[in-house]
Length: 239
Image (cartoon, rainbow, N blue to C red; front, side):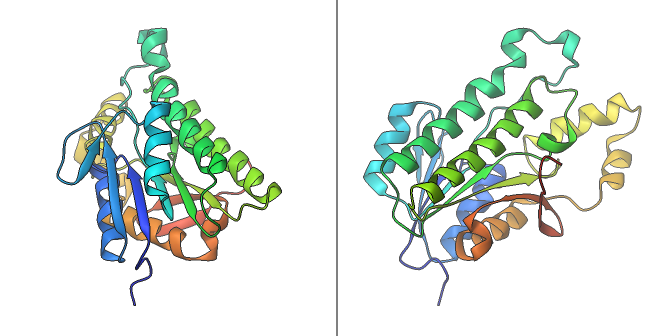
């Protein structure tokens, strides 16, 4: 039997990259998948996920068993002194805002007991990202928001498992490729040389497998997990 049979999965950021792989993996695991994205794609609800009306409407309408928050803005790839405040704070205005609204709705409804919310943060949350303005700080805040919401779920005895996934920088997505090229140039390396030092990349299929795992096992009850090509590993404390 498929592990997500008869379940509804709502994937925010499902039109491309890791989000598309996650939506496909949920579907292959038997879930009915509702995708949300800014960019038109087949079977995707086109909407601004950072809009609180969108979060409230879609959560009330679909009452998902699994909610995956994967959407995020592409940061401007420049060092800090070449950023404006508007470019520096872009991921706070989109990624953090989106996470706040959807987690708030999950707790307010609330989602049914046993449901899972999985927030995609970034490995930059623990390793930094000096060429992307406030991106690393925004991603760290997404991780903390997931933790705060998980604590409230337990305190209120809601039974909603809430976790965060921190994928390593990858050249396998439209978001990751420009960042890899920028960091390679910063170190005076060719992209191929830089990527060879990174090891095997995180692919959409790897991300999908990880999200299905968190949606269907006790590990999805809480915590933060670094995602590499080798899979998930727990992130301890503030490290």
